[in-house]
Length: 144
Image 1 (tube, rainbow, N blue to C red):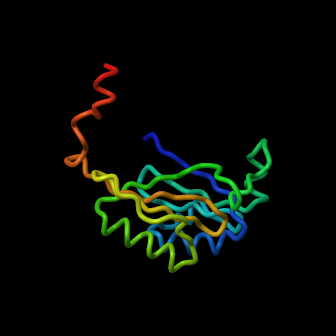
Image 2: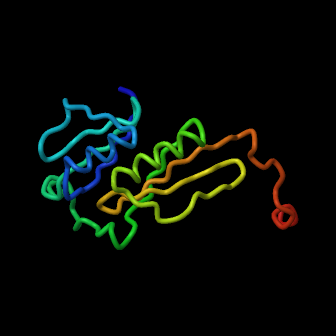
């Protein structure tokens, strides 16, 4: 079996969250979905499980974090272009998400941040490794 990642998120409204993530570009896998949880597919190896609070609590050993007031994790999605970063972010905004800060441009990487209805934070980014700095900053060179 291939190594895969399943990100499990507690959400207040499973169907509303499924619509949000569908607009971001995820697709639903009905084989692993029911009324209390939806399996959303980003790629053949990356899956997002949207679980009702009740279903999430049945797996968890700690209380569910309040992701509206605190960050429980940052989830990042790599895409093939800055246009795709912008398309996904704009789709998420039109679906009711919020963008807590402006685009970040690191020269070789551009990143936008989006939060869903429950406050789960996603960073959508494009990285062009041909623009990655090859020289270390002077202060770092002096330490080596």
